Image (cartoon, rainbow, N blue to C red; front, side, top):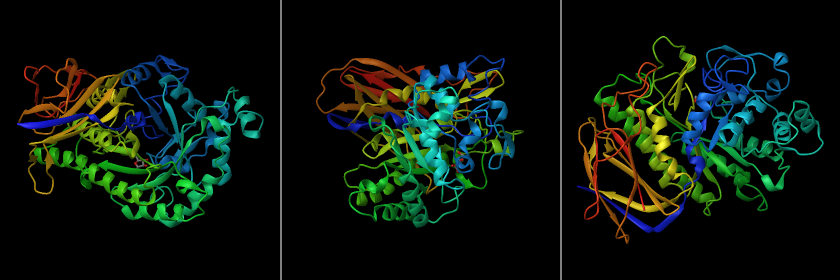
Length: 501
Ligand code: AHR
């Protein structure tokens, strides 16, 4: 039997709510159709935002939303997306399907969406093809209270008050679609551009994010930090509050891409192995950060993560629309447990992407909407947001899988506490075996179960469709005993949450 030992007296720091963040790009049907349908749509909406989607997202508790890209960000010129919608410039979305972008969703609409969701705002600036002036003026438009050309423009557009901008990134994937730069060059540009991102409101400062690495490109992280830290001491923390990391789970790499719903056992375990690799990547990027910033003032923002499969048959390859099964729920469970355990450094993460793109929490078809298995894991794990990570470790796990080099431990876990309630989340990766887990506390002698939930525990190919929207939902979990201590029996291919006090 496996054992989960929880040291409830060992508080390891807050799990930043932003770790449960989301990403929305002008890509396929994420923004248009998925989140925004416009004020004149027959689909019920508030100021153009789909009511059904916003309500579902609020239930799931969205702490943060990143926008407008992605690769789109480094070709986006924000001034094209403000003012009278009938006069906004149209453009071709060259990255994603070559479709026409009419700019009807711009800065003011993004801020309205975040207002409705009650979440923090994360805007990604254009370094690749934009100017310092353009980036600087965007921040001025969003945040300056008082009289200035950009603040006046915002007021003319019907928004007298400045917005609350929480995070601003200087470019996206500048090692690739954001300009194919070398890290030293990017580091120099980061230093220059961020200089002109003024903090107009000292009481409501936004945090600056530098573009970090792809996957295990440790050289990028090292060189960007070196370049940004090579300066006079009065400029603390290399001028950045966070540095990013992007990592997508592709079971066989870029080629061949595999179906989101049809996969064999080997592919299943490869996918979960690739999710588990996040732990190694995060740890090693953190080791580099530790050399430059031992006091951990700079956060790691894993602001793109998730599965990347073949698009659904018959859909535009540039739209990245994929289904989402119990396998995706396990990827989410494993990954979020990893982030929780790295809460000392991982201060933000954004799953890609929120609606209709890659590992989405919601899929839409016209006026229909479904929640994916990944949605249910995020909903279950919401209790970790802002909670204190507790010391925990698991023994008696087994490496499972069908191929050497692509095995994964059968169980992962994380434990936190908030308002006197302990939340335990466990994923069981095994396709075939339920796993007994004995939960042992350092000091706690008695407890009362507050809630026990489960996602999965069925055929890992199961997924929700517009015809069968509730095939995979969050269910009550009942297979546990409380006499003489807590004993769980975690079903195969499931993610479980137990809350107790
Ligand atoms: O999420 C899809 C794309 O993946 C993003 O635009 C880009 O940043 C990444 O390569």
